[in-house]
Amino acid sequence: MGHSANFGVADLAIIGGGAAGTLLALHALRHARRALRVVMYEPASTIAQGIAYATPWPEHLLNVPAGRMSALPEAPDDFVDYLQAAGVHAQDSREALSSRFVARREYAAYLQQRLQDAMAASPAQLQVYPQAVLSLQRDEGCLQLCCADGSRARAREVVLACGNSMRPLPVPGGDTLPRGRVAEAWDYEGVRLLAGEGDLGIIGSGLSMVDTVLALFAAGHQGTVHVFSRHALMPLPHAHGAAAGFDPQPLLAMTLRQRVRALRQHAAQAARAGIPWQSVMERIRPLGQALWRSLDEADQRRFLRHVVRYWDVHRHRIAAPVYAQLHQAIADGRLQLHRTRLQGVREHDGALCLTARGEPLRQWSLAALVNATGVETRADALRNPLLRQMLGTGLARAGAHGLGLDSDADSERLYDAGGQLHADIAVLGSLRIGTLWESLAVPELRQQAAHAARAAVDKLEAGLS
Picture: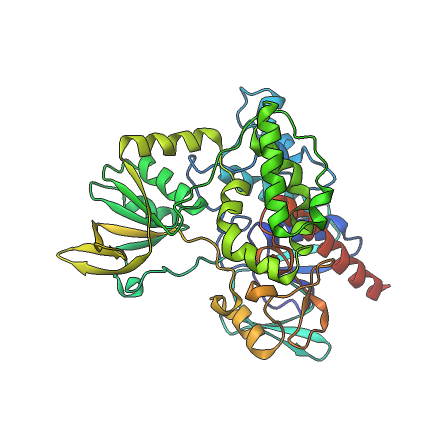
């Protein structure tokens, strides 16, 4: 893969080389019938990792069984095929491997391999340019990209696959703490360096918290780990059980309140039949986007205000052995969960003094803090310079409820500030959360990537004929 920006006008520019960008490149190369130029902009040294799959540690598992992680919608067993060919978990039968939660690093290796396969077989050419794109503007019928090294390039089609950024630490005083006393949960090496004798604090109780706790314990941490969260809700486990048989379609015509009541009834009926509530969630899984889009604006706001925390822990589940490990740590006192609103943090006598609101005021003395607050979804808080520039110049606008960027629900195309669809700019992944809600997981990413790649390639090739 070349690293030169000197390739004239790219046919397709992919901004971001994590899982979403790699899936897009993979599908563009597989679909191309002409010698198109595809350029991926990714400052990280390794593509296909992004935030989720960059972890090198074996304790960080996929949250979905291998059998449901294919990059190719038309080949649902492709990831299992790869694992078998690579000899990963060679002791497992194919059926056992399909239901296994394998290490996340295996998924990055899989995407890299499939991308190499596609590059070898495609008439199109992929070049990776190891720079961040800082701005985008229209230029003589093309889109001009300005990169962090000052270079400029032009492209006929652009797809934003920028991936995820972490929310800032939501504790007053947190931004003044010295480096080495605060780590982001996605800094997988930095988290492990905090392991030791002292007590540690984690802000946030979702999937990033799970990663952090597993990494600290694997690195031999001896102190207590305190988890601070407004709701103190941790991700719930996957479960094996019979499928739930109800028809989920009537949910789409219900209000939010009616849906919550109906799902509780379905879970109770399933329990009476010996079926886990997780099967009820699996039954509605394919309708995730339709369920969001069919709520009116007021009910969407109610969901975001009152339901989202409960939805997240039931929807974004973890492997049962991981769940058991966390609960054993709670039983042993090594992991403590605090439902609280934090007031501030400061350095005091060589430690971090964390305080929480309440009567009386609660305090903890900690060696360090980990920010595990999860993916930033608010458009006005996005830290990516390109996205800030696009919002500032009107090339993009915030999505519903200020979440992500506004895009067409049925294609991946981006809206500008005036409500016009760009014919040549598309967007994938978490930036579509306001439009689709369900837009983070591989089943959604692979569909979006395949659809956006086909649309871009067909349009480009039609222009060449």
